Length: 451
Picture 1: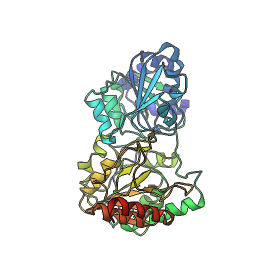
Picture 2: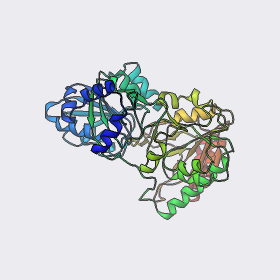
Picture 3: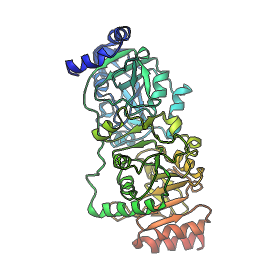
Picture 4: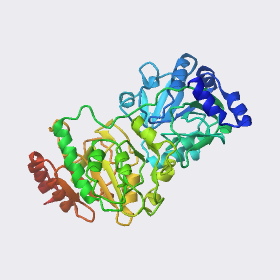
């Protein structure tokens, strides 16, 4: 931070708290001396990853062995999963990103399949012992509280159980409201470093015009299912963006979601997302974290309509179900003709994770007027492989069971599966598959399901 920034925020802190704060300020290299061989380290994930602390930890690699690092999806470089780091660091992922996928599938890192709502319970119940938590926080307010900023979700429970908390204090971290604060008294070491936060833009640079048209059609089908006064789970990506484009004629929408991105800002500013009809936290946008750009970071900063809560609350199906007309929109890698959904692997190769899909599908199913939706293009990007399949690939995991699936949406329409027989499901899914694959899907269904 600049000298002026430092004076501005430290002047707001009472003298006694400032003395406590200053007594904990050290360099990153000194701070990570607290980490010992064999420790379990939990890193604040998403766009909140404290890169300076990670860099300092990796600089100590030759002094360390068997340090296990836990987190969900992280945006940006992760040097501890690079080849050659295996004897120093072992990453165990609750959700796999592009920066960890190769390491997981090559055995240099490991994957823990788990519902996002239950990740914090691993720390709360000491199933995973938390030795050190690495955080990136906003500067403290006049009461000494720092905000977890863009990611509260799974890290708060870990930090509350950690033996040692190391915090990177960053002026660029927005101050988010809700259950999203930690007091400086709880922090053992403070490292001041004002680097830019990681960003995750909405637009897929590899998306072709044909793909964007497919997403657009899916988005329109889903938007047609959204009633005025609905509460939405909206993630990041082409399908959520396409849905939001078609919500401009809706009224009094609400948001209760594990995460959101830049896409909701315009709908909030236009009054389409108001939250006024929400039956839980009316008038508030409820989330666990954001993945986006500086635009959304500025939007959430000290914004009283937004509350961040830990994932064990946000993703609790019983909490989700308290929102009437809850619309949950989740994606998939493939769906078989009975309705089984694979969204975490391609055959035996792990791709992502369970995340919050099951949490929200089940919560929406129990919501009054709720609609749990699985949305996916009918084919892979090159159009050569159907995503509506006779059976899941060998080794593929079932993330959402056939009993949980109510609606499946592709660019060819909506299949309503709830209460339907296997034969009825197969017919409905074939109708929304790509036309060039329908004959083989129908042939399989006749042979196996006696359609």
